[in-house]
Amino acid sequence: MKVVIINSGSSSIKYQLIEMPAGEVICSGMIDRIGLETSNFSYVTKAVKVEEILPIANHKIGLNKIAQLLMDDEKGVIKSTKEIEAVGHRVVHGGSSFSDTTLITPEVKEEIRKLCDIAPLHNPAHLEGIIVAEEIFSGAKQIVVFDTAFHQTMPEVAYKYAIPTHFLKENKLRVYGFHGTSHKYVSEKAIQYLKSENKPYKNIITVHLGNGCSITAVKDGKCIDTSMGFTPISGLIMGTRSGDIDPSVLFYMMKALNYTVDEVSTLLQKQSGMLALTGYSDLRDIEANAEQGNKECQLALAMNAYRIKKYIGSYTAALNGLDAIVFTAGIGENSSYIRKLVCTDMEYFGIELDVPKNEIRSKEIREINLPQSKTKILVVPTNEEIEIANQVYKLLLN
Image 1: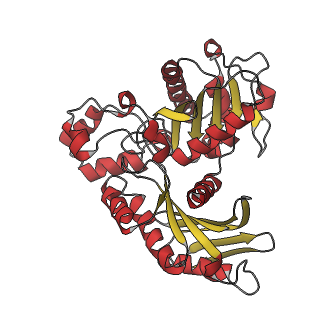
Image 2: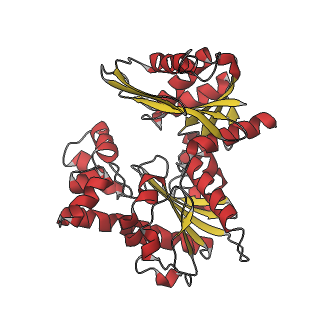
């Protein structure tokens, strides 16, 4: 079964063609800077690699370009779009309506549209990608996987805000959590990896560190709490997002400093986090400057690690113990510096890092704790596209 996976962003499209159930990636690529004259386009198979800079005005033109190359006489990997049995779409926000992978219907699209006000940076682009894909791959089943779905197992004690109840009942104001596809994938991989041990590994904390960052408490394979809330702003310090902040700071900005609601929203989502602390949003730049003695970058990295440690402590209490920590995503997988900062002085929790192992880079799951460490420390590469393909395949089988 050939499945196309589409992650349609506000100005980008990431895609893969995957043969299921083998999980073989037949082709992959991305388009970014959509809407500009200098859009970047890439298309990679085992035989060819195409990289172009060209004007791609919108998502429809972009997805048509992808379909054309998929069927190209020389560079293509299929003869017709009829070979595609399913298209899996990543959607960031599914609200409280969706707790599982879902076949797309007009009603599902309407629910995604209703959530655009909550996820204005993501859901409109996802919806556009779905509509265009329905035209191009008209014979395929269109299926959506929500980033919020994995977190729907959170108990009420974790997802409910301490505000008047009618806001939850009427307006669905609650903790939703994000990066769920990644947290689900790496927690399951960690459980599989640790099965060879005699000790049961029930309590796991997954730490997703990329430009967006989140941390999730997983008990018996299910999410019981997560750091992102009603939107992806809360929780850890991120590339351009503030993470947790006293709401009164925002009231003060609007009342005393005359900021508008939109200006505060832009500030928290695009101008805060590591960018605000250092002038850089890319961790590689921040680490390089920190190593050269830049005090602002050193402080920002320390603040970042401190916030992660606080969440590890609180989630260990919520889980009533900790069996394993999992680092994943671009920073979590590749930054030995951040992992070391987070795991230092954590012996009380049974967390003891093996520093030489921590420095080793690999695309495989790896254990980076000392032998005597009571808590396993794992680096598990995430693969959201494969996870989406797996969920699409399971839905179609059933």
